[in-house]
Length: 211
Image (cartoon, rainbow, N blue to C red; front, side, top):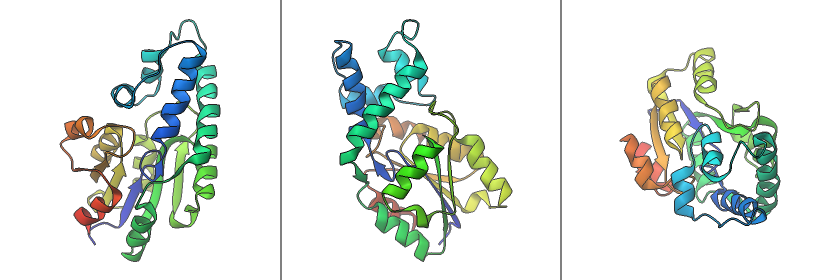
């Protein structure tokens, strides 16, 4: 196989959690007697940094942003009780491991929550590193990905980034890696195609492209 390192995103890529995320946001809007948003609106609003998403829905001059994030995460954890890995995730992890590739997670998810969820869904053993965010503000992943590449002397041309956001494309471009984007997560295929990169509807299709 061409790739010696696969960098996975977590939310919306390996973890099928757009449903719990949308449900939590709509719970927050309902508490404020606001109309819920549709999945299409969610796709249009979401991005990095996540603050822009909340600015579209709430008056951040009137409510504390940090408290909004806490409220969202309480609801997200509740709805995630019915969550699952993305269809085909385990098969892809097994296949890349069988091909001899190292695999890591680089995520905007807060690192304690990230490690707990990776353990809960039984996939911790697949990863050589799990690089989460130091807080819940869902900031850039670029520095963490670049730092890992540099520290482990990985050839960027032999690195594959798999994610579900335009930010994953930006991360791959920054480190010089290839990238495939998954439209089953937190942004639509229409939005992801703006990157000019391959966009697929399932993880299985990623294997068809790169193996």
